[in-house]
Image (cartoon, rainbow, N blue to C red):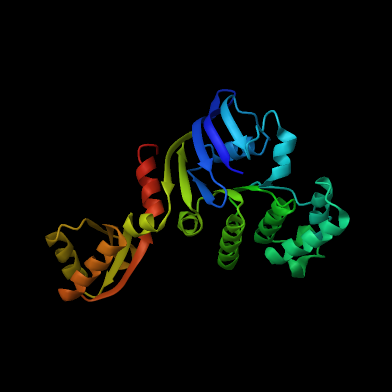
Length: 304
């Protein structure tokens, strides 16, 4: 049930959208695909979803070739694009039943599955409302339900958190972790790196159509990786002097705070303890940039 991509390339005329991307996404894991706009993420997902044919390279989804076996691949995947139509004249329930019919799911099973998914994405109260009245975030949740209607083994999500409020993002995170726990392969593209760090098992960093790095997001990575911390103090001048004396690189940021980069949570805790020990009155010490964001910036710093 894995996704395997090897040396994939795709151009649109003179525009090279994907130059050389390789990755592997495993069952039971959430794999994050991260990169700036125009880095080739959506083009890659479209190829995985059988909607584009690569110019070269090899793709396997659940062991199948999307180019030569598109029907079999579509039966196994759940695809949630960044933008999609919702058949505004239909109710939320009717949208899901229509998709179920397209997958030739038996009517009784389709109704049961629709009710399950409406509960999962918290749209039960809107089940009989026309899709046109949904907000952007509610349409995103409907899109996720659509992608799950056929109980796929592989889930492809392009910016699923776009337009979601904070509570809905937390619920989405829980849904994705639950799907991975069921043994599904989840590949998700997003710009919200702090939330990806909380939900993903590994991250594939892409830029300018190339895969640059695959990073495991296990506990050691979070605990040991370099991250930025913001310090707020009642003694800003003393804090600045202390950091200079102890050779800690720092810079001033908004609100009179100071930002430092520290390698690992243990070193961050030690830095805070040393500041307090030396009488620096610290009133705030919080992470401003996670380890995944730092790894992403380091991997793409020459690709601005």
